[in-house]
Length: 64
Image (cartoon, rainbow, N blue to C red; front, side):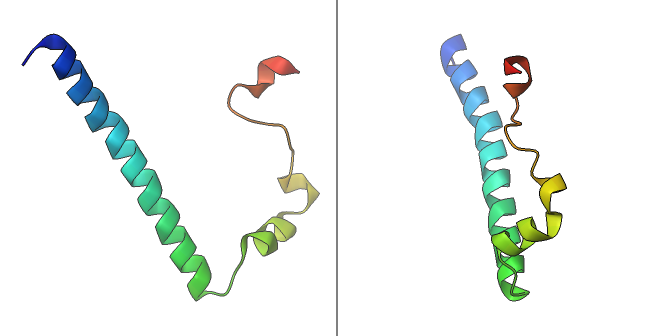
C-alpha cells in the first residue's frame, strides 16, 4: 500500500471511529431521554442561567 493511501486509511479509521462513537452516544442519549419523558428544553431550564455561559466554544477564548 502506498504511503498516501495508508495515511488516508488511517485517517478514515480514526475519524470514522470517533464519528461512529459520537453518533451512537447521541442516539443512546436521545432514546434514554425519550423513555423518561424528558426534553432538551427541560434539561436546559433545570440548569438555569449558570448552565448557559454562552459564547463558549473550543477556540472562542482567544476572541474575548
